[in-house]
Image (tube, rainbow, N blue to C red; front, side, top):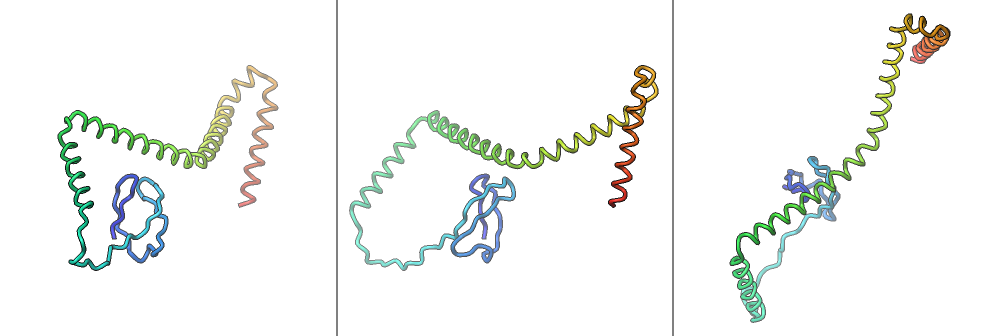
Length: 165
């Protein structure tokens, strides 16, 4: 069976056995939209040829056709503005949906991104201090003991991690 995502109108081919008769939640693989899908059964009732025709139904159908004819006679500009307004509403809805999805996805990934940036920055600082150790000690004589202790601490941490592995 072919199922269409109500959000982005992407179509997917799904095996009938995967969807129970009471329906289930589906998630679009393209836009990650989640919706409840229920298999709609076709009308299996047998139509009888001798049913009475109700005149009210005919009159309402005639009125609907007249309304449609009047709608078709509207100027093209009005129709174009209505279509543009509908497109804008759909775009706004899509933007709201994507921003909420992005917000939920970014919460978990932001922490790891900040952690990686912090680790890389710390390693870069250590390399920078090691590279400029001699000129820094010449300018700040008391810095030699601090840098020596820092490098010894880092060496101890490195040995500790190697022992854990």
